[in-house]
Image (tube, rainbow, N blue to C red; front, side, top):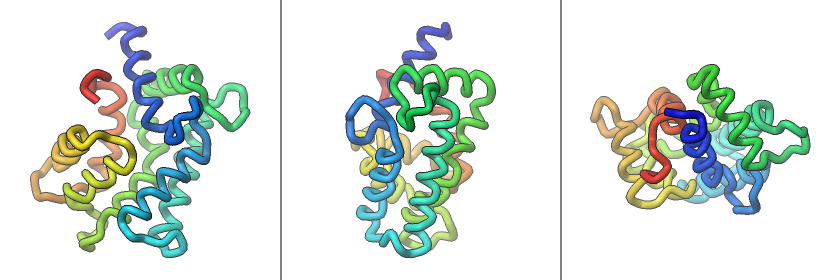
Length: 175
């Protein structure tokens, strides 16, 4: 895959992070995603799961800003996102996924409404993906693909691993 195609794929992912559609990614986008997840699963912000989700969202934002906010204005533009994400992914795709781990761990816990020991059902992950902006079709396909052992449950490790794959493998036209 050439550099231009790789950058195009990653730039396509920008919209998923730009929750308010204002052309930049900032802390408010991560907080909005957390708030929507909590609302979807009837979880309060003040409970342990809610606090963990907001803490994870902040950690994810800090990690994103750390690799991509070149000018330090606490906003990541599309160009900064492409430049930062491309560099980090080329260096180490798994490391990029690690910045998302606290948020993903907390999101799985919130989605684990059936108390499956920190693993969420495929249906719950599908709901979460839709809340975060995935189309119904893509959310369904993605949730099914995350259930690697086909037990109907999705663990944090599956989601974290899939994040790096999402950024490096899936064609933008397929999302």
